[in-house]
Image (cartoon, rainbow over all chains, first blue to last red; front, side, top):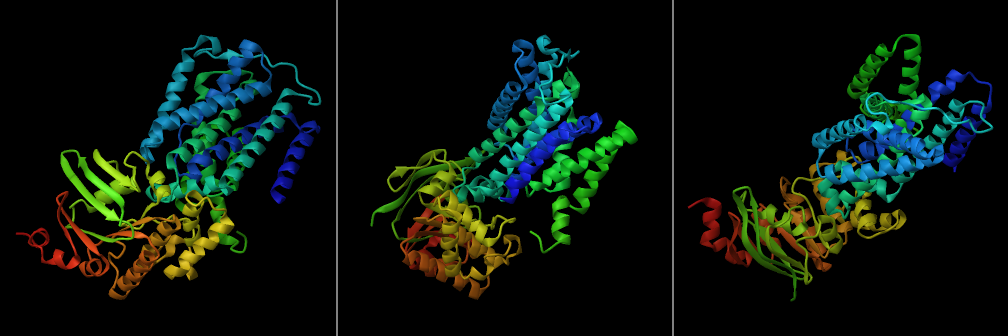
Length: 310
Length: 238
């Protein structure tokens, strides 16, 4: 009950903010932070719950972005349709990649997911219709009322996606699926011997992850008014998703949210106040610090310092 | 007694190494069956083929009249073949109780509230009830062995394969695990015991089979097995 209330409050707050006279830059920055919330939450379903480290975030994010561009260029499809189609394509890619790679374990799986990024990027570089290597300039459609700017509207859309992702991640964690995925992470052999259909569960997790990441990619081209392969399939999305989950804590759906809010905001602040290069360094240093000093992330620290709360 | 499990000419190779060479054995319903053999003789490979962790290349594994050798491990568990692991593989990040809730949910399709009742019943029988809320990673060796058996029991097996459940345990602990296995058998569960502790396997089993180099070298009552010259040669060398 408390969860649903806070989700409703968050949704209403996002909507209210978008209508308020707040500075435009806030929405510009918050959109990116929220994108990381979705990506990290999605990543954690396979990476945190099941223990399968996916480096392929940009592939799923990118297929979503390019699906949106394609639909926009071809049919002038509205944003809602773009997002739905992007989620579907992300899910299909997740299912397909999962089918091919989820029999691999540990580092082998991780490497296979990296390969998917390069395959997707190469495909898009060679597809002229969606801009090829040069990229494609996009003209935003008219903004829908009550919003005064397109960025404000995208902020609300991304808030809704983040809330949706959180609801899904929490549902999976608390259901029999979550327990099965945890069993897979702890011991795959023992999970099978306990009746858990490990491959099916991993495929499901990978498909849901792909769908959420794909959906998160769909609004990006309109946000930038531009799409181009090198930045779309950028490894910074890998680091953002995985880093947020590690920094926040992977054992609970709250972890990646905390991590993404911290890491995303910090990156935005550093990019503005210092430089874009320093921001990459900060992420790296933070990751090393957390892996060494607090492998269970902010959540782990909180549990240690506040033993009364669970 | 009808055969619960029929292993028919099962073979398994690892590269050029023959781990199992046309092994055939039948296990009757309700039987206490002992599987012995020196290290590397193929005992664990055989039970991996029965439980589905490995696929046999030829031959058939028939459980309750049904050929199961192409089924995934989780499907065989759901049919009633449960196992414990030689090296305990607990779900470390879960409590002892949660460890058992995995099979109660995935095999018994029980809701957590019902699963907990069943899990606590099993844990009480195993003497692990006071550890229900303890993380599995904090258990002692003997507790881990019991957890292996308890988790296997939570899958409601008809056939329980106990893979060296007593390895590394002290005398009194061996007796405790033996008592648990006798209790389970008394409730109608067929048990295959793989064990290096001869005294335990001989006390427990009604029938014993000895594997050596992937083949059965003899079969019989515990008393006849210890007398068998082939067994003595396999264990002590010629």
